[in-house]
Length: 260
Image 1 (tube, rainbow, N blue to C red):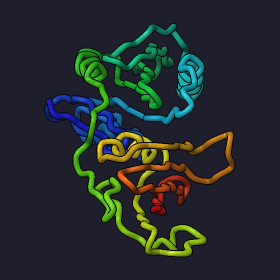
Image 2: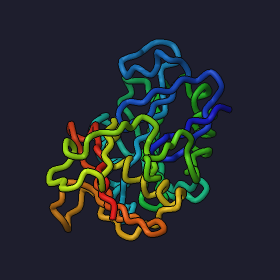
Image 3: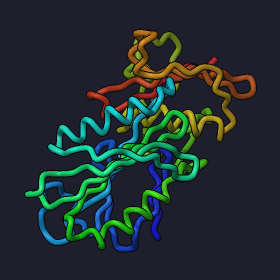
């Protein structure tokens, strides 16, 4: 089976040969045919599996997060909750539930939530009831294959050895952050990535490239008004103060680094 690995969040999932997948912001969708990735598609083979990750840096208990998720989905879809069961996949733990949709829709709706450390995966499977034989077994195998990888491919390094996502490009530090007094002590980069995903990227990749995480201040953070995530990284005799600055309503995050 082919494997999809998210380059920032670092989760991996195996999917059936011939299935299609597509990124939609923070959501990745998998379907038996490409046209079924369109939420408005009602033709043959309609149905998909969705994965939406969420950062949980303060390690909130997953029970209220699960209640929030399943209640939100039930309200949005006009569904009734039929009860929940514990769900365990490898070292990921959470809950799953079947939701009863209005009979006129002729659709099945399953939702799940899995947590590992500070990352939560929201899951959803929906398809026609009479396509259950087509979707249930492959979707179940996909969910059971979920795991987090130790490292991802395509990570490049800045001139000073800081890991960067594959599509991030150098930028002028003075254009990214205010108050740069000595540009020679700075690096800056821009790219399209939500700030939550970029935090997960650095928490995973910095240690893999020899950086010790001495401090980490998440974003958003109820304990500090700073409009960014901050990390202090140490490697040999070098210290890097990293700021992850959200732009464009979270669709872009700039990286500003001051070295000492």
